[in-house]
Image (cartoon, rainbow, N blue to C red; front, side):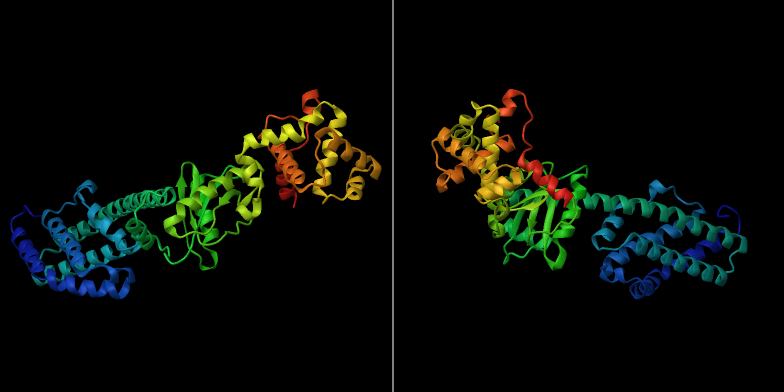
Length: 413
């Protein structure tokens, strides 16, 4: 042992001989690592030299003292950050460390044999080196994983900050260019802002990853994150979500510098799609004028006053009139189709339509009436107006809102 007479001097001679070969052995190790562990080819020579020096000096201390330091004395945080930054996986880092310790062990045995070191001491110090490998490996793994988590959180925050500024229009042109370069966005291409929420119990971060995966299909780029409890970002094309439980609004194509305008439109499309109870991704071409119904409750009240409230005084007959008018619009203003679907005579339908015109003072042949009446009916079904159907006021059954019917059809289909 180091304190016993006759053993300290030979051991120090072995350690001194090993120290003299540190540089040569380090060079051989560097060549070995780059040959057998591809991820280390991207690690700079000076960084590998620094790590090797640290490991070598620690091993010499263990050989001299015959004890292994506790895990908390292994300062691996900086090395772990460097490995993560260079893209070196944890498994590769551990393989490299084991190779380094094996090289030191082989050097120790060779020098111990050359200097005639006591075999019992050789076994003892070799055992210490393996204990060092075990303790250090566990600490390296723990610090590496924590560093990966920290790096991932930092990247997520940086991504969220970039997208928040991009989508809310607070970034400078230089910041947009820098962020686009970091996240692989092509400034020469238009992007569409998207805003989405889960249509179910999925967490927003899970939805963000799934939706980005769908958006990146066919080589298209996308960048998404969770902002204000919703998934938001930019996509190169309209995603096909398949069975993904999501409701999303999609803005029009725009340069990245104008993504904030696309994002405002995406928010309106999401609001409208949710109001109609829809699942999937919707833009203005899908929702058309119906998107404006959600955003204009005052106009909805005005049109309901004009077209629906005159029917309320008619009680149940007013409900029948409204149902016939609605069917008349949905069936392309084909009276016979309305009669067939309602199982009534054609003249019954004609009478109800004529009574509607008498009560409202509006002609169903006028395009303005068709547009305004469609708006009023959609607003009532969505609940964006204070108007109530006659049966609602009388305590009878209310009609199923169109949005719910749409959702039901989507799920049944």
